[in-house]
Image 1 (cartoon, rainbow over the protein chains, first blue to last red):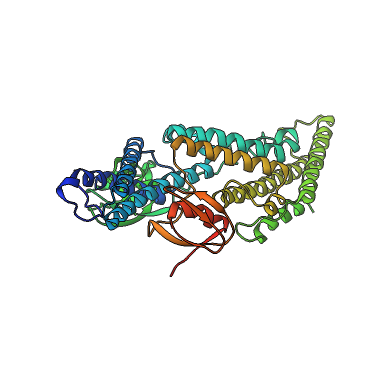
Image 2: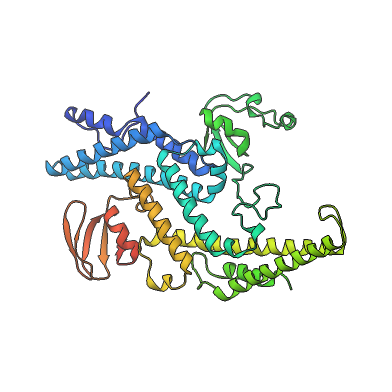
Length: 229
Length: 197
């Protein structure tokens, strides 16, 4: 685990432990998680441990900055530490915001699919439950209850529909740009539909950029072998 | 012509500017609902006809069946249009919560139906509960920060305000050097502007 150089000045020996607080690889991990989440069409797994650590570190940094301000350390250093703090906070907030947006968009699909529901954090699950009640009540009261009996379902067009056809699903065929972190052989790029596997005999060297449908690299993304850009 | 009113509703959605709401079209909405009931009545009447003639509903394919099918399809189309109308307005309401904060300006509230007002309150409450649980305000920092402190000019009299590290008197036309997170909520509401010199 190497340290990523922080954006601050090189501090004196007395402040070495403060530097380790700021320049840890957690920020880099958060940046990766944020980028992946931004580019992926469906919601990815919530990085509980990472977010917990980052929140703890942010709090520590805030206290550090407050201490600095009080003990009147050089204001340039203070503002640099502050900027680092702000940037990390922005990453965290943006990460949570993107996830919330995906939840709101694909609400009913997530509630239906256990695999996706398991990817949410505890607070997100609460949010999903409450929000589905709010929007369900709103749609029911204004539209559905005024319609004739067989047409009152929120997720089906009518009781004669064979499946839940009013639930929007994320587009898994969207093309995404990705970069491999390790060597990826042709066998790992297979679709679950085996008959199509024969047309995709390609391999990915680490560091190369690829433009590929999301569903092909879904598994690789989960294993961490591939990053979205 | 079946479905014309419903498509008018949807066209209204697409003709308004992105992020803006027109007043809730109660009239047209109720007309579409009435059309749905009449479709349903027609549908049932045709099915009754078929039953009286002793035909099996599931398998017979005569004129009555096709008439009933048209009623059913128009009904589902109306339902889709109505749902789309409500859902897209709900989308706009949600984005307004992120842009404008908890209290929506009056001229906006007047454009909403009762159910939409309930929805916007419910959504705001849900969002607040989530932010409380996470102990983080998610509505600030919408743009990547360039500087931790920014210069602002106050446009409206806000008065004495308690900021993160000190309190300030935000009188009209005064300029301040504030923390970005503090200033953002006022900038969103239009009470301050950022000085980009």
